[in-house]
Length: 361
Image 1 (cartoon, rainbow, N blue to C red):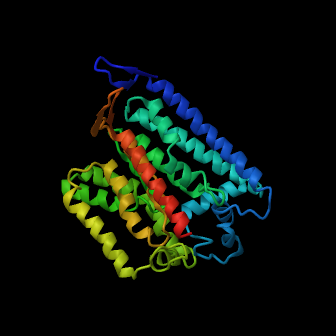
Image 2 (cartoon, helix red, strand yellow):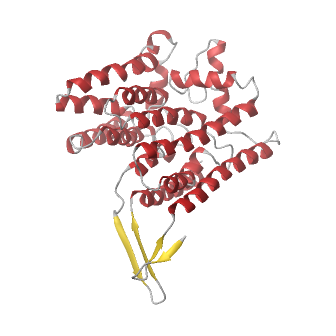
């Protein structure tokens, strides 16, 4: 697995082997967690957590109440329709719904392989393995120390995000725009990217891409985010609630103008200093940071930043900085590229999530 070079420095010699080991480990711990959750929840007094909330999220749709709040219809309509579908094919068996949540997360994670291949990332198996054992992803999407950690609605978001990334390298960006629009319609994480795309094409006077953008991103946004205002009862309550209210788990709930000012400041600073050089991929992922600046006040979750891990592995900088420690008995030398740096930052995100769990929840 390791060998010394001519200068006595230890180096990896087989990324493929360690990558396969990481992949097997990543799949194994996910299967273990599924079994663990089933065993633990044999006791009816143990709460299932978010996955149970998601299972009942759409209940008020069928009673005719259409309650848009933090416990019921708290997501955009496309996510609600997907929840209805998975609840329907669960045949009112909650444990089967949990299995679907596990299966979706696993399949979405494994499908990242095809994105790495599309972007021609080196040592694909190693990078995929590193992604599968990433503690930030595992803590936020799979495991919770208090209750079931699955977030099936996040998996819906990742499905469309992965599809948009798959079509990004193509010269014709039509399908990238279409699936980007669907990504924005499942959750709002990348919604500011729509404004960034528009401004970039306007600045560059790229009317051909502007036309594709307006059609292929516009259609999903109109169908799933805008038109529901006309026919869904009290639909605007969803957006008003996210901006104005807070929950017991929130660190601090500032006045709405503070939230908007912070959001606008981050949006505009990036717009002024970076948008000319940024490509559509960078705009997509930076929009998550922009949206985080306002969503964090509603719920103090660092997990909103988890999708940035995908971008970290898709960058191509293999040598950001070098560590070279020459000890008396050996010499430690390795290059820290985007993959290792992404993993290291993920550990910091994981620590931040744990601190929030310990001191706020």
